[in-house]
Image 1 (cartoon, rainbow, N blue to C red):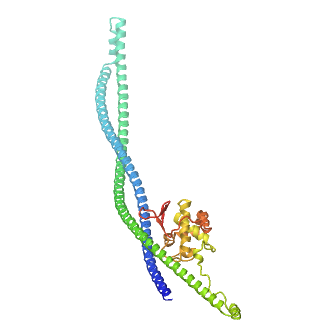
Image 2: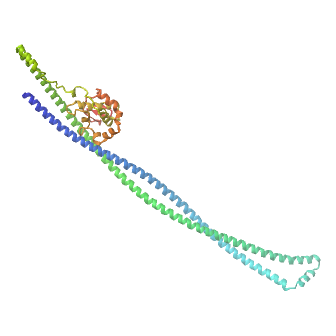
Image 3: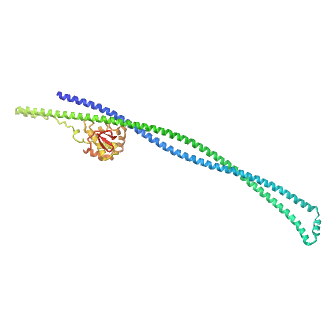
Length: 430
Protein backbone atom coordinates (compact mmCIF):
# COMPACT_ATOMS: atom_id res chain seq x y z
CA UNK A 1 0.00 0.00 0.00
CA UNK A 2 2.86 2.35 0.78
CA UNK A 3 4.29 1.77 -2.69
CA UNK A 4 0.89 2.47 -4.25
CA UNK A 5 0.59 5.70 -2.30
CA UNK A 6 4.01 6.80 -3.54
CA UNK A 7 3.00 5.94 -7.09
CA UNK A 8 -0.25 7.88 -6.70
CA UNK A 9 1.64 10.88 -5.28
CA UNK A 10 4.09 10.73 -8.18
CA UNK A 11 1.21 10.48 -10.59
CA UNK A 12 -0.53 13.47 -8.98
CA UNK A 13 2.71 15.45 -9.14
CA UNK A 14 3.11 14.58 -12.80
CA UNK A 15 -0.51 15.53 -13.45
CA UNK A 16 0.06 18.86 -11.68
CA UNK A 17 3.14 19.52 -13.77
CA UNK A 18 1.19 18.54 -16.86
CA UNK A 19 -1.63 20.95 -15.98
CA UNK A 20 0.92 23.72 -15.41
CA UNK A 21 2.58 22.90 -18.73
CA UNK A 22 -0.81 22.85 -20.44
CA UNK A 23 -1.66 26.26 -18.97
CA UNK A 24 1.67 27.62 -20.22
CA UNK A 25 1.05 26.09 -23.63
CA UNK A 26 -2.41 27.65 -23.64
CA UNK A 27 -0.90 31.05 -22.85
CA UNK A 28 1.52 30.70 -25.76
CA UNK A 29 -1.36 29.62 -28.01
CA UNK A 30 -3.33 32.71 -26.93
CA UNK A 31 -0.32 34.85 -27.86
CA UNK A 32 -0.09 33.06 -31.21
CA UNK A 33 -3.81 33.69 -31.83
CA UNK A 34 -3.44 37.35 -30.83
CA UNK A 35 -0.42 37.70 -33.11
CA UNK A 36 -2.31 35.95 -35.90
CA UNK A 37 -5.15 38.46 -35.54
CA UNK A 38 -2.66 41.34 -35.68
CA UNK A 39 -1.08 39.81 -38.79
CA UNK A 40 -4.53 39.41 -40.33
CA UNK A 41 -5.43 43.03 -39.49
CA UNK A 42 -2.09 44.25 -40.88
CA UNK A 43 -2.60 42.25 -44.07
CA UNK A 44 -6.08 43.73 -44.40
CA UNK A 45 -4.69 47.23 -43.81
CA UNK A 46 -1.93 46.59 -46.36
CA UNK A 47 -4.47 45.35 -48.89
CA UNK A 48 -6.75 48.38 -48.36
CA UNK A 49 -3.78 50.78 -48.50
CA UNK A 50 -2.53 49.13 -51.67
CA UNK A 51 -5.97 49.47 -53.25
CA UNK A 52 -6.11 53.15 -52.26
CA UNK A 53 -2.65 53.76 -53.71
CA UNK A 54 -3.63 51.99 -56.95
CA UNK A 55 -6.83 54.05 -57.22
CA UNK A 56 -4.99 57.29 -56.48
CA UNK A 57 -2.29 56.48 -59.02
CA UNK A 58 -4.96 55.93 -61.63
CA UNK A 59 -6.44 59.31 -60.66
CA UNK A 60 -2.94 60.80 -60.85
CA UNK A 61 -2.47 59.43 -64.36
CA UNK A 62 -5.90 60.77 -65.36
CA UNK A 63 -5.06 64.22 -63.97
CA UNK A 64 -1.67 64.22 -65.68
CA UNK A 65 -3.38 63.34 -68.97
CA UNK A 66 -5.98 66.09 -68.44
CA UNK A 67 -3.21 68.58 -67.67
CA UNK A 68 -1.32 67.51 -70.79
CA UNK A 69 -4.51 67.87 -72.85
CA UNK A 70 -5.17 71.26 -71.26
CA UNK A 71 -1.66 72.48 -71.97
CA UNK A 72 -1.96 71.27 -75.54
CA UNK A 73 -5.26 73.13 -75.83
CA UNK A 74 -3.62 76.23 -74.34
CA UNK A 75 -0.85 76.03 -76.93
CA UNK A 76 -3.37 75.61 -79.73
CA UNK A 77 -5.54 78.49 -78.51
CA UNK A 78 -2.48 80.70 -77.98
CA UNK A 79 -1.43 80.01 -81.57
CA UNK A 80 -4.96 80.76 -82.80
CA UNK A 81 -5.00 83.95 -80.73
CA UNK A 82 -1.68 85.03 -82.20
CA UNK A 83 -3.04 84.34 -85.68
CA UNK A 84 -6.19 86.34 -84.87
CA UNK A 85 -4.09 89.27 -83.71
CA UNK A 86 -2.05 89.04 -86.91
CA UNK A 87 -5.28 88.97 -88.92
CA UNK A 88 -6.55 92.03 -87.04
CA UNK A 89 -3.28 93.87 -87.73
CA UNK A 90 -3.49 92.87 -91.39
CA UNK A 91 -7.11 93.99 -91.61
CA UNK A 92 -6.21 97.32 -90.05
CA UNK A 93 -3.50 97.75 -92.69
CA UNK A 94 -5.99 96.89 -95.45
CA UNK A 95 -8.48 99.40 -93.99
CA UNK A 96 -5.77 102.06 -93.98
CA UNK A 97 -4.87 101.28 -97.59
CA UNK A 98 -8.54 101.37 -98.55
CA UNK A 99 -8.94 104.70 -96.83
CA UNK A 100 -5.93 106.04 -98.71
CA UNK A 101 -7.27 104.64 -101.99
CA UNK A 102 -10.65 106.20 -101.30
CA UNK A 103 -8.99 109.51 -100.51
CA UNK A 104 -6.93 109.32 -103.71
CA UNK A 105 -9.99 108.35 -105.74
CA UNK A 106 -11.93 111.24 -104.32
CA UNK A 107 -9.06 113.63 -105.13
CA UNK A 108 -8.81 112.31 -108.68
CA UNK A 109 -12.57 112.46 -109.10
CA UNK A 110 -12.67 116.04 -107.91
CA UNK A 111 -9.97 116.93 -110.40
CA UNK A 112 -11.82 115.20 -113.23
CA UNK A 113 -15.05 116.83 -112.16
CA UNK A 114 -13.36 120.27 -112.21
CA UNK A 115 -11.97 119.64 -115.69
CA UNK A 116 -15.33 118.40 -116.93
CA UNK A 117 -16.97 121.42 -115.41
CA UNK A 118 -14.52 123.72 -117.14
CA UNK A 119 -15.22 122.05 -120.47
CA UNK A 120 -18.96 122.26 -119.95
CA UNK A 121 -18.61 125.91 -118.96
CA UNK A 122 -16.54 126.57 -122.08
CA UNK A 123 -19.18 124.98 -124.26
CA UNK A 124 -22.01 126.82 -122.61
CA UNK A 125 -20.14 130.10 -122.44
CA UNK A 126 -19.65 129.99 -126.22
CA UNK A 127 -22.93 129.95 -128.03
CA UNK A 128 -24.27 126.92 -129.76
CA UNK A 129 -24.19 128.85 -133.02
CA UNK A 130 -20.45 129.37 -132.59
CA UNK A 131 -20.01 125.62 -132.06
CA UNK A 132 -22.08 124.87 -135.15
CA UNK A 133 -20.19 127.52 -137.11
CA UNK A 134 -16.92 125.92 -135.91
CA UNK A 135 -18.09 122.60 -137.37
CA UNK A 136 -19.39 124.09 -140.60
CA UNK A 137 -16.33 126.25 -141.05
CA UNK A 138 -14.34 123.18 -141.76
CA UNK A 139 -12.61 122.99 -145.14
CA UNK A 140 -14.11 119.63 -145.89
CA UNK A 141 -16.96 117.42 -144.88
CA UNK A 142 -14.65 114.92 -143.24
CA UNK A 143 -13.08 117.68 -141.21
CA UNK A 144 -16.54 118.82 -140.14
CA UNK A 145 -17.39 115.25 -139.05
CA UNK A 146 -14.14 115.00 -137.18
CA UNK A 147 -14.88 118.25 -135.33
CA UNK A 148 -18.42 117.09 -134.46
CA UNK A 149 -17.12 113.70 -133.29
CA UNK A 150 -14.57 115.48 -131.15
CA UNK A 151 -17.26 117.37 -129.28
CA UNK A 152 -19.21 114.08 -128.80
CA UNK A 153 -16.10 112.25 -127.64
CA UNK A 154 -15.37 114.94 -125.10
CA UNK A 155 -18.87 114.69 -123.73
CA UNK A 156 -18.80 110.85 -123.72
CA UNK A 157 -15.44 110.90 -121.99
CA UNK A 158 -16.80 113.13 -119.26
CA UNK A 159 -19.83 110.88 -118.77
CA UNK A 160 -17.57 107.78 -118.64
CA UNK A 161 -15.26 109.33 -116.10
CA UNK A 162 -18.24 110.36 -114.03
CA UNK A 163 -19.56 106.77 -114.00
CA UNK A 164 -16.10 105.39 -113.25
CA UNK A 165 -15.81 107.76 -110.31
CA UNK A 166 -19.14 106.64 -108.97
CA UNK A 167 -18.28 102.90 -109.41
CA UNK A 168 -14.84 103.30 -107.86
CA UNK A 169 -16.29 105.19 -104.92
CA UNK A 170 -18.93 102.49 -104.36
CA UNK A 171 -16.34 99.73 -104.63
CA UNK A 172 -13.98 101.38 -102.17
CA UNK A 173 -16.75 102.09 -99.69
CA UNK A 174 -18.00 98.51 -99.96
CA UNK A 175 -14.50 97.15 -99.44
CA UNK A 176 -14.04 99.42 -96.44
CA UNK A 177 -17.35 98.31 -94.91
CA UNK A 178 -16.37 94.67 -95.41
CA UNK A 179 -12.98 95.24 -93.80
CA UNK A 180 -14.55 97.07 -90.87
CA UNK A 181 -16.98 94.16 -90.39
CA UNK A 182 -14.13 91.65 -90.55
CA UNK A 183 -12.19 93.71 -88.07
CA UNK A 184 -15.16 93.66 -85.66
CA UNK A 185 -15.51 89.90 -86.04
CA UNK A 186 -11.81 89.40 -85.45
CA UNK A 187 -12.00 91.60 -82.34
CA UNK A 188 -14.91 89.51 -81.05
CA UNK A 189 -12.99 86.30 -81.86
CA UNK A 190 -9.94 87.68 -80.06
CA UNK A 191 -12.00 88.39 -76.93
CA UNK A 192 -13.55 84.90 -77.06
CA UNK A 193 -10.18 83.22 -77.49
CA UNK A 194 -8.70 85.21 -74.62
CA UNK A 195 -11.67 84.21 -72.46
CA UNK A 196 -11.24 80.52 -73.37
CA UNK A 197 -7.51 80.75 -72.74
CA UNK A 198 -8.08 82.25 -69.29
CA UNK A 199 -10.64 79.53 -68.50
CA UNK A 200 -8.30 76.73 -69.53
CA UNK A 201 -5.42 78.34 -67.63
CA UNK A 202 -7.59 78.39 -64.48
CA UNK A 203 -8.72 74.78 -65.04
CA UNK A 204 -5.15 73.56 -65.56
CA UNK A 205 -4.01 75.42 -62.45
CA UNK A 206 -6.79 73.68 -60.47
CA UNK A 207 -5.81 70.28 -61.89
CA UNK A 208 -2.18 70.89 -60.99
CA UNK A 209 -3.24 71.71 -57.43
CA UNK A 210 -5.33 68.50 -57.22
CA UNK A 211 -2.44 66.56 -58.72
CA UNK A 212 -0.13 67.89 -56.00
CA UNK A 213 -2.64 66.83 -53.32
CA UNK A 214 -2.97 63.39 -54.93
CA UNK A 215 0.80 62.93 -55.04
CA UNK A 216 0.99 63.92 -51.35
CA UNK A 217 -1.71 61.35 -50.54
CA UNK A 218 0.16 58.66 -52.47
CA UNK A 219 3.44 59.50 -50.73
CA UNK A 220 1.79 59.46 -47.29
CA UNK A 221 0.02 56.16 -48.04
CA UNK A 222 3.24 54.66 -49.41
CA UNK A 223 5.01 55.62 -46.17
CA UNK A 224 2.15 54.11 -44.16
CA UNK A 225 2.27 50.98 -46.29
CA UNK A 226 5.99 50.67 -45.61
CA UNK A 227 5.28 50.94 -41.86
CA UNK A 228 2.61 48.25 -42.17
CA UNK A 229 5.05 46.01 -44.06
CA UNK A 230 7.74 46.48 -41.42
CA UNK A 231 5.27 45.81 -38.60
CA UNK A 232 3.89 42.80 -40.49
CA UNK A 233 7.39 41.37 -40.89
CA UNK A 234 8.04 41.94 -37.17
CA UNK A 235 4.78 40.24 -36.21
CA UNK A 236 5.51 37.29 -38.51
CA UNK A 237 8.94 36.84 -36.95
CA UNK A 238 7.35 37.07 -33.51
CA UNK A 239 4.75 34.49 -34.58
CA UNK A 240 7.52 32.15 -35.78
CA UNK A 241 9.26 32.54 -32.42
CA UNK A 242 6.00 31.77 -30.60
CA UNK A 243 5.47 28.77 -32.86
CA UNK A 244 8.95 27.56 -32.01
CA UNK A 245 8.31 28.01 -28.27
CA UNK A 246 4.94 26.28 -28.61
CA UNK A 247 6.51 23.39 -30.48
CA UNK A 248 9.16 22.98 -27.78
CA UNK A 249 6.49 23.17 -25.08
CA UNK A 250 4.35 20.66 -26.98
CA UNK A 251 7.31 18.30 -27.12
CA UNK A 252 7.90 18.66 -23.38
CA UNK A 253 4.21 18.17 -22.73
CA UNK A 254 4.14 15.15 -25.03
CA UNK A 255 7.05 13.66 -23.10
CA UNK A 256 5.25 14.35 -19.82
CA UNK A 257 2.10 12.76 -21.21
CA UNK A 258 4.11 9.74 -22.30
CA UNK A 259 5.69 9.41 -18.86
CA UNK A 260 2.33 9.89 -17.19
CA UNK A 261 0.73 7.22 -19.37
CA UNK A 262 3.65 4.87 -18.71
CA UNK A 263 3.19 5.52 -14.97
CA UNK A 264 -0.52 4.89 -15.27
CA UNK A 265 0.18 1.70 -17.19
CA UNK A 266 2.64 0.57 -14.54
CA UNK A 267 0.16 1.33 -11.75
CA UNK A 268 -2.59 -0.54 -13.60
CA UNK A 269 -0.27 -3.52 -14.09
CA UNK A 270 0.62 -3.47 -10.39
CA UNK A 271 -3.07 -3.22 -9.49
CA UNK A 272 -3.84 -6.16 -11.78
CA UNK A 273 -1.00 -8.17 -10.24
CA UNK A 274 -2.27 -7.27 -6.76
CA UNK A 275 -5.82 -8.34 -7.71
CA UNK A 276 -4.49 -11.61 -9.12
CA UNK A 277 -2.54 -12.24 -5.91
CA UNK A 278 -5.62 -11.45 -3.81
CA UNK A 279 -7.75 -13.71 -6.02
CA UNK A 280 -5.23 -16.54 -5.70
CA UNK A 281 -5.12 -16.02 -1.94
CA UNK A 282 -8.91 -16.05 -1.78
CA UNK A 283 -9.08 -19.25 -3.83
CA UNK A 284 -6.40 -20.84 -1.66
CA UNK A 285 -8.32 -19.98 1.50
CA UNK A 286 -11.55 -21.31 0.00
CA UNK A 287 -9.81 -24.53 -0.93
CA UNK A 288 -8.69 -24.91 2.70
CA UNK A 289 -12.25 -24.43 4.13
CA UNK A 290 -14.86 -27.27 4.58
CA UNK A 291 -17.18 -27.89 1.63
CA UNK A 292 -20.23 -26.34 3.40
CA UNK A 293 -18.35 -23.10 4.08
CA UNK A 294 -17.17 -23.02 0.47
CA UNK A 295 -20.79 -23.21 -0.72
CA UNK A 296 -21.80 -20.39 1.62
CA UNK A 297 -18.84 -18.39 0.53
CA UNK A 298 -19.67 -19.13 -3.08
CA UNK A 299 -23.17 -17.80 -2.60
CA UNK A 300 -22.00 -14.72 -0.73
CA UNK A 301 -19.03 -13.98 -2.97
CA UNK A 302 -19.46 -12.10 -6.22
CA UNK A 303 -17.06 -10.70 -8.55
CA UNK A 304 -14.48 -9.15 -6.29
CA UNK A 305 -13.08 -6.86 -8.92
CA UNK A 306 -14.13 -5.03 -11.99
CA UNK A 307 -12.31 -4.57 -15.21
CA UNK A 308 -10.88 -1.08 -15.32
CA UNK A 309 -10.00 -1.15 -18.96
CA UNK A 310 -10.21 2.35 -20.32
CA UNK A 311 -12.27 2.47 -23.47
CA UNK A 312 -10.34 5.58 -24.46
CA UNK A 313 -7.30 3.45 -25.22
CA UNK A 314 -9.11 0.50 -26.80
CA UNK A 315 -9.72 1.96 -30.23
CA UNK A 316 -11.95 4.54 -31.83
CA UNK A 317 -14.49 6.11 -29.46
CA UNK A 318 -18.15 5.99 -30.36
CA UNK A 319 -19.03 9.09 -32.34
CA UNK A 320 -21.81 11.14 -30.83
CA UNK A 321 -24.45 13.11 -32.67
CA UNK A 322 -22.83 15.97 -34.56
CA UNK A 323 -19.25 14.67 -34.07
CA UNK A 324 -18.88 13.98 -37.80
CA UNK A 325 -19.83 17.61 -38.59
CA UNK A 326 -17.51 19.01 -35.90
CA UNK A 327 -14.61 16.83 -37.03
CA UNK A 328 -15.07 17.54 -40.75
CA UNK A 329 -15.32 21.30 -40.03
CA UNK A 330 -12.10 21.49 -37.97
CA UNK A 331 -10.36 19.43 -40.68
CA UNK A 332 -11.64 21.92 -43.28
CA UNK A 333 -10.41 24.92 -41.24
CA UNK A 334 -6.97 23.43 -40.56
CA UNK A 335 -6.32 21.45 -43.76
CA UNK A 336 -9.03 22.30 -46.28
CA UNK A 337 -6.33 23.28 -48.79
CA UNK A 338 -4.20 20.20 -48.08
CA UNK A 339 -4.17 16.78 -49.78
CA UNK A 340 -6.39 13.98 -48.44
CA UNK A 341 -3.50 12.50 -46.42
CA UNK A 342 -3.03 15.84 -44.68
CA UNK A 343 -6.76 16.03 -43.86
CA UNK A 344 -6.69 12.47 -42.55
CA UNK A 345 -3.67 13.32 -40.38
CA UNK A 346 -5.46 16.32 -38.78
CA UNK A 347 -8.44 14.09 -37.99
CA UNK A 348 -6.08 11.46 -36.56
CA UNK A 349 -4.59 14.05 -34.16
CA UNK A 350 -8.11 14.91 -32.91
CA UNK A 351 -8.98 11.25 -32.27
CA UNK A 352 -5.55 10.58 -30.75
CA UNK A 353 -6.24 13.32 -28.23
CA UNK A 354 -9.67 11.90 -27.46
CA UNK A 355 -7.99 8.55 -26.76
CA UNK A 356 -5.32 10.19 -24.55
CA UNK A 357 -5.95 10.65 -20.81
CA UNK A 358 -4.30 14.08 -21.01
CA UNK A 359 -7.02 15.59 -23.17
CA UNK A 360 -10.83 15.75 -23.03
CA UNK A 361 -12.49 12.43 -23.81
CA UNK A 362 -14.81 13.73 -26.54
CA UNK A 363 -14.40 15.20 -29.99
CA UNK A 364 -16.20 18.41 -29.03
CA UNK A 365 -14.14 18.67 -25.83
CA UNK A 366 -10.87 18.35 -27.75
CA UNK A 367 -11.91 20.82 -30.44
CA UNK A 368 -13.19 23.45 -28.01
CA UNK A 369 -10.36 23.01 -25.47
CA UNK A 370 -9.00 26.47 -24.69
CA UNK A 371 -5.86 27.59 -26.50
CA UNK A 372 -5.56 24.58 -28.82
CA UNK A 373 -6.93 25.42 -32.27
CA UNK A 374 -6.55 28.88 -33.83
CA UNK A 375 -9.70 28.67 -36.03
CA UNK A 376 -11.80 28.12 -32.90
CA UNK A 377 -10.22 31.09 -31.11
CA UNK A 378 -10.55 33.41 -34.14
CA UNK A 379 -14.18 32.50 -34.86
CA UNK A 380 -13.43 31.03 -38.29
CA UNK A 381 -14.48 27.58 -37.08
CA UNK A 382 -17.91 28.86 -35.95
CA UNK A 383 -18.41 30.60 -39.31
CA UNK A 384 -17.42 27.47 -41.26
CA UNK A 385 -19.67 25.32 -39.06
CA UNK A 386 -22.65 27.63 -39.65
CA UNK A 387 -21.97 27.71 -43.39
CA UNK A 388 -21.62 23.93 -43.64
CA UNK A 389 -18.14 24.16 -45.18
CA UNK A 390 -17.06 20.96 -43.42
CA UNK A 391 -18.90 18.97 -46.09
CA UNK A 392 -15.76 19.34 -48.23
CA UNK A 393 -13.85 17.12 -45.76
CA UNK A 394 -16.55 14.66 -44.72
CA UNK A 395 -14.83 11.68 -46.33
CA UNK A 396 -11.61 12.21 -44.35
CA UNK A 397 -13.56 12.74 -41.09
CA UNK A 398 -15.64 9.61 -41.63
CA UNK A 399 -12.53 7.56 -42.40
CA UNK A 400 -10.92 8.68 -39.13
CA UNK A 401 -14.08 7.86 -37.15
CA UNK A 402 -14.07 4.44 -38.80
CA UNK A 403 -10.60 3.83 -37.34
CA UNK A 404 -8.33 4.93 -40.19
CA UNK A 405 -5.31 6.76 -38.70
CA UNK A 406 -2.14 7.68 -40.57
CA UNK A 407 -0.25 9.37 -37.66
CA UNK A 408 -0.04 8.63 -33.93
CA UNK A 409 0.82 12.24 -33.02
CA UNK A 410 -0.94 14.63 -30.67
CA UNK A 411 0.18 17.90 -32.28
CA UNK A 412 0.67 19.54 -35.68
CA UNK A 413 1.95 22.90 -36.90
CA UNK A 414 2.63 24.70 -40.17
CA UNK A 415 5.97 23.31 -41.31
CA UNK A 416 8.67 25.98 -40.98
CA UNK A 417 11.60 23.56 -41.12
CA UNK A 418 12.39 23.97 -37.41
CA UNK A 419 10.20 21.19 -35.96
CA UNK A 420 11.09 17.50 -36.23
CA UNK A 421 8.20 15.26 -37.14
CA UNK A 422 6.20 13.76 -39.97
CA UNK A 423 5.67 16.29 -42.77
CA UNK A 424 2.45 15.92 -44.77
CA UNK A 425 1.57 18.75 -47.12
CA UNK A 426 2.28 22.07 -45.41
CA UNK A 427 2.03 20.65 -41.87
CA UNK A 428 4.43 18.83 -39.60
CA UNK A 429 2.91 16.29 -37.18
CA UNK A 430 4.70 15.36 -33.96
